[in-house]
Length: 241
Ligand code: TMP
Ligand code: ASP
Image 1 (cartoon, helix red, strand yellow):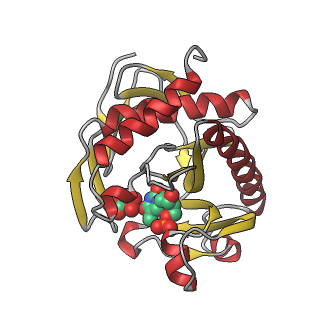
Image 2: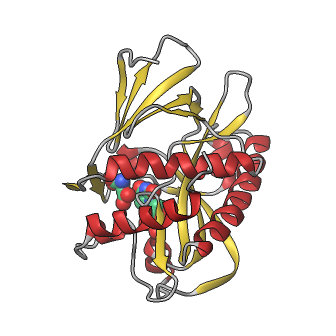
Image 3: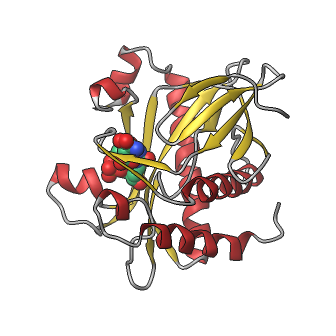
């Protein structure tokens, strides 16, 4: 499958048309941004890692019965995906307090919740992705009631699968962001990516951050952290393609 015209360039990915109207090619860049694009940089090798990691995790989720946009890995940075209309919600699942949750509610990072929690943001850069609840999402017509129920059900199941997987790698899944899309027939499937850009991943023993917080917070060792988390994933997923 060849890349057609460039349809969209985001902060971390480019999206191309293909000969098949139902398929797109996503191409992962090394560009990194944070705080709604205010902070910019490059994480050398990130595109390759995020592409391969996201694909491995989506294949795992597919095997566990979660429908995703993943179709085929074409190269180090390029993946064929099913074309969807993205539902403009950022769905965040949290197992442990961190980031904006810790800040907003005045709690320390690292507080483990009895049960995972979920929140939604309106995916809108101009507004800074404001937090919203399900009723707001319905009022704004971003998704219907049934879609929101499906999204919540899938998100918690995804959390169960990913938490177990990362635990087997010696990594704690703190929180992550998901995006969903609609297929032409209306079915809701997982889209976008699952990578160190979109998850918080802490070493289970040392608590060391192995994700994009190293970039966001200028902690150093960014590339090394991406390589380390990829190494751990590959150790577990070898031969499962
Ligand atoms: P937060 O604590 O900053 O709200 O982030 C929660 C999770 O969502 C964290 O794993 C990082 C991820 N995330 C994104 O993938 N994209 C974003 O734009 C933001 C703000 C967070
Ligand atoms: N990628 C997002 C941005 O540019 C935020 C983040 O991941 O922290 O702003």
